Image 1 (tube, helix red, strand yellow):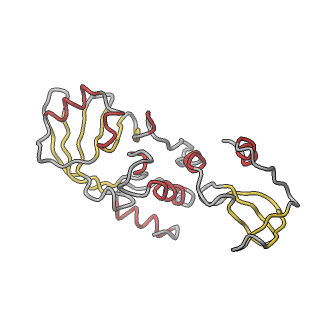
Image 2 (cartoon, rainbow, N blue to C red):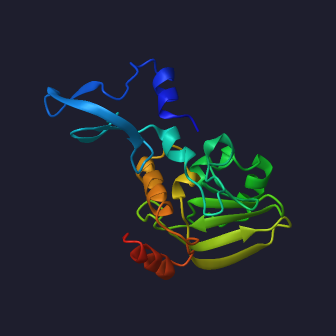
Image 3 (cartoon, rainbow, N blue to C red):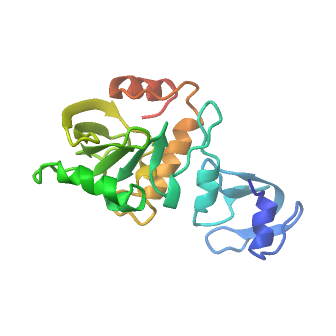
Length: 221
């Protein structure tokens, strides 16, 4: 991961060092002495001064937020190819808006041919190893931080289908979409992932009740 100094160099900004003076406050006229550098909970660069800690930018640098997201076993949490989708052991999860960027066209068409037209789905799972495609009707995908899967229809390679209902929740739903998605605030979703990952010292549960208890134990809601 690039350091704070490397980002400053790439952006061709003035190099700051300990002892330099910056101007802070509402009118940017209150001098503060630079004591050091750091980062906030979103991995954004900060400046430590004799008058407190200040963010270097008002905006957030997205690649800094994503680059540090890792599981407890140190596996990097990142989007699938074309910068969208979540890969869990060869099963690719993606919002329907981006399905054509991830799922082969023939497999997607085969699945859609066997799904009733009145079945409202918004997420698709493609099992690369078994060529099974599943259509999920996740009713609270946009409104909940960890949405419940809900009703689904799975289409097998021979065209047969299996219907069911899943009570499990999904984590890191921002992986399902790209940054241009407007259904929910993507940067906030990424920040939430980083927040609970930094505090939880056990694998995140896929069951809502257990997950809520895990959050309570580390002081999150």
